[in-house]
Image 1 (cartoon, rainbow, N blue to C red):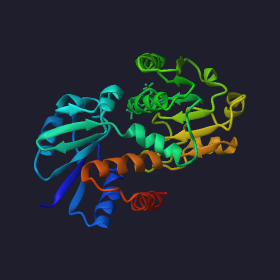
Image 2: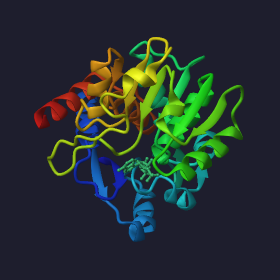
Image 3: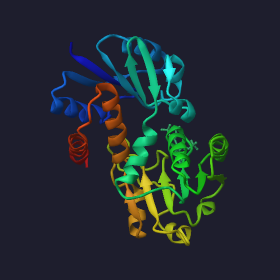
Length: 287
Ligand code: ATR
């Protein structure tokens, strides 16, 4: 029987996950297809029923369903429970199991660029769902200090409080202004600023282009990471490059969470090079 995997999103139009997974299925000769489903919130329960059918491998979950979907699943992994968000569903018989691989995908995207968060002072820009998974990953990777800044300061404080529950040795603070992030070694941009909208390149970044000089202070080998991948070179990363920083774009996080999902669904080693090429070809076609 031909199998399927799906993305639960709203809107679903521009996802690159189908390109990446269909290339991997084809490469390994697996009779399966990956489809992007546009699922408005009021039809989420119906989509989950569809996922229980025998031809479904499982699904990825993205905006705006990562938290809401948790209630409709039969089981959550410890990590999904701790992070408070699900980006991967695996069908196990008639049961749906929720997992979070954004955390591992993010850490792997740093690791392949030779960047380790352990012992670092980290500035986390943003306090939405993506920031929550990344903050959790950074704490578990042993960063020394996590400083969370957000446009809406109350959300930064709320995220800081919830991460402190599981903080181990990491000092977690919320920053009411950018200046409170001074001297950070690792800068992670998780807001939607800088994302391309309707074909227009954005020109916005949470850090003003000339702001790096005063913010870097005594940072050690500072690195800027943006989880946005459209465009690959966001204003945040462009200004960081000009300031002499190492930069990492969002395509690695997309790739490695995708590889983890593929392995969970098929039980086979993901053809990461094939998936990376499919992703990069699609992104280059756009730029
Ligand atoms: P996700 O779950 O994908 O992270 P989200 O929960 O909507 O999405 O979070 C989006 C993030 O981008 C938030 O940190 C948001 O800041 P607010 O909490 O203040 O809304 C941030 N963001 C969105 N638009 C922004 C803007 N114009 N300036 C600064 N931050 C912005």
